[in-house]
Image (cartoon, rainbow, N blue to C red; front, side):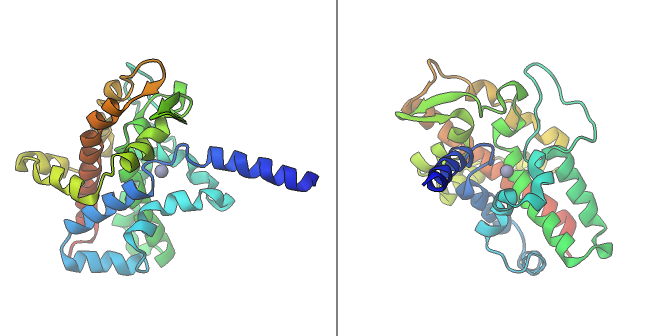
Length: 256
Ligand SMILES: [Zn+2]
């Protein structure tokens, strides 16, 4: 009986802990990969598919979240985000964080002829996931509240935290689809798309970070329908931008 009780407590704790700090939920990460794939020519896409053993967009985009429960990958836990306090600017360094790991995966893959198939695959999956994560504003947010994870809020009458609202709640409740994100992509002016394609992860964080004032724009720990409606297109934009940047990186690395 005691064991069952312990198990129940453990499962509840695991369920409570699971959602936090995951970056976009599965749906968001899948859309980032699908947008990127749509921007690649078929030869480049085939090369990548082979290198990742034909994983689906859904599996590939969320692989880094799937391995979180596997202790062998504990070293990757700090890779999903970077914390920079309010009013401060990012100081370049070698601490493992989302920026450094994107940089490092790109430079490793530039010299992939010396790498094993498994290493190449892992680094591609890291790029798929982290370029998505970086465009969730709370993954480039403030350490004081753990990127919104310790900000308890009521979202449409449900107790949750701000981070999870941005990871998944709005995407789910506003029914954001791939087509919505593609529509936002199609509305972007061509010169802007060209600017977005420049590979510079450290600069990339400025745009999602500039959204933090809007992210924290709510009162009484309550996030209402109006907030969700207002930020729906913001999320669609971020997913589209992440897809454009992921495609730029993949073209740089794998386009023949
Ligand atoms: Zn993540």
